[in-house]
Length: 362
Image (cartoon, rainbow, N blue to C red; front, side):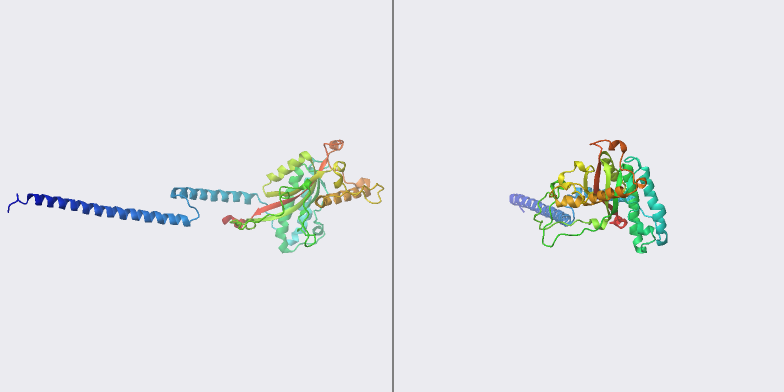
């Protein structure tokens, strides 16, 4: 065979074989890389779908960071709940047979002794307008039902602690401290609720009464009612202006979760009241009646209790023998001042929120 004759053909054939082998290798390698890239794309798509369906949609690194932050937040929340639960009053266990003695010999004497010893706002201590705090029927032997005892004991122990704090803060007279009665609606059906007057207007009452509710309002994950119980007291007292701020600070420092709402106050010196707040002269007193001045209904409602209490106090002091009269409220050196040393009439609602132990594991 003449190799020289077919030399060119052999060289071309060898080159074709090499090129074909290279192409086959490149194609196979490209297919492997394509399959690898396709698998990576599928994996990333699955990861994206998993993150999209989850509660958080960041990158995997951010997801891990947020998960750590969430666990830290849960840990701190549980620690805060432990602190709140530790500061809450735990009322003592009480039986129906021992309840009367508890009120007569433990609860009321402690409150009265605390009022007598608190001389910051008055020489003779804090004047108690209602020394029995509405518990006279229990003192007389009318005992509560066993099912009422836990709630009643909680309310009474809260009354003890909060009133003692009020005494130490410098109040001069405790007019009323009682559970808040349920709100009653007295207006006729179909009539609008009267707007609050400007003197007592708040940011909430100044808003327009007609507003469009959003189509959808997100519900909280956990409702306040599921986490807390609440006990609401209505408080009326007299306190000097400088001690008033001390009183608010004392309530804020209480270990229980206290919220002050519906706070209303006016000067105890009626001569400084505006005309529409002054009550008309009582009939038969010999005073010349002032012309009727229209007063805002809301102000009248809010101050009606204080005016009634002041009128009853004036009558009691007029009809009570001199030797048994209640000592004057306040400090003697401040009574000499014409202005600047007056007492304030203050009323407010005090809401005590109590964290439920069952909510700790939520």
